[in-house]
Length: 584
Image (cartoon, rainbow, N blue to C red; front, side, top):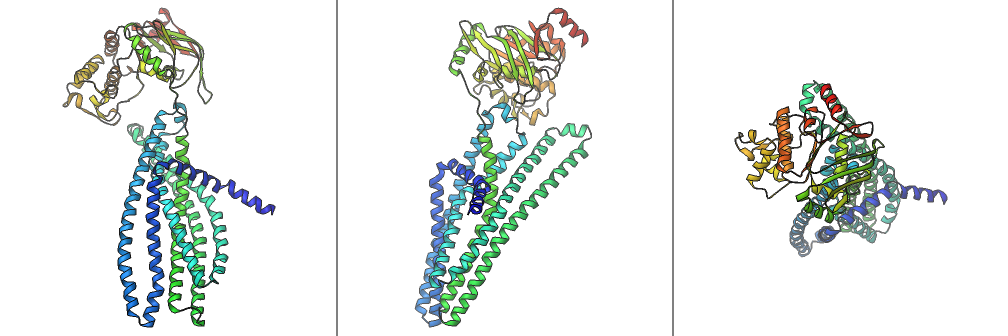
């Protein structure tokens, strides 16, 4: 008895525990579509009952043929034609309903997952490679939407078909029950052996698919670098290696799938053959009629077919459970908390005349991976100032801007204030800031569409004005379509300096009191760089501009300069600025 309890506990704590948990989560997620799924289930079951009724008519048909009752044969024929036509219509309707519900489910899960990714805690999201997130969004959601909507109807239909058919067989020949009881344990044990292994292999299959997608994305995103450095053979080798691993895992999944299928299918076929032999023997003994034997053979075949269909659902079910776990992981990511939104809106209104001051006092920060970036840091920026953060790469310049944007959270005092009002930094502080990050951040679409992302109702004149302030209009106006010129993926078609100026113009559309520039002028020549910065401050006298830079050419325009190094931030004077410029 203790051994049996241990086996039961192992089953509960293994694959089946995970499966039940994921299935419960899936159908909680699909709660809004329960009536659509229920309607589809009812239609499927009605269609299945009609199909079984055809099977039951075979006994009447054969017995009438043997006895020469042509009226009975005509009755069965009319029944086949009439009810069969209804069944065709039901099948068409159920397929349409299934497609409609699946499409809605896919849309909803996609929207929920996408929304959670873009609103979740940034540090946690970036633990997932973008290629992995794309695989989950595309393949895993499609698997869930396609499979789960049909699960209840398919499983219910196949199980009821098996139960009713077995019940009718037993009704006409009770001795068939012992054959069913003999085969059932073999089927259950076989499924227990292979399902857990299939689940683990399917999870590996999903993970390697994410790795392949990640390599695709990185290769295509950096294709110019791959070619320039002669890395085509290296990346080809990497892809071959990934695909070889993927092939091995696919074959492993197939092996366990075949193993599970073979045990269950062969058991069912053996049962069907035994039933056939037993039925023929009973006809020979005169216990049942030829029509009854035909019915039993047909029902045995029906049970076998239904059982085979049920078995084919198992790999799909295992794959769906694996996909559900991967999507559930994303939907369980913690969201960013928005604090002081109303107060920041008021602070924004008050800042229109006086601008915004920034004060950081005794700030400490480390990433969740444990890397310490800042220790006991203090600095400030006042309205109308250009404040620069300089220092070696990797010392925390970009991290400083992330802290100001509320993307990561630091300990200590970090406040934004205007006359009579002061608030601690939070995600709501982004209302006051325009940000130009490092690298090429222009998106697919026209120049005007890119700029209007931050101000959808902007006129063409406002777009042109922002481009002029960023010193970008001089090359934009020469384009065939002007501001309606289409930007290629990642800014293809423009130089790095042109893309930087377009990104600055986009940020200016916000007309915020604070502007953050992260190496945003690194690709500009010195004259253009100085002109852009002068325009930024001229256009809005009370704007606070905070920038990071490696280039000393801009330092002479800055009102305050801080050096970031060794977890510290220190303001530097004229002598140190000259030293930096001489070193450059």
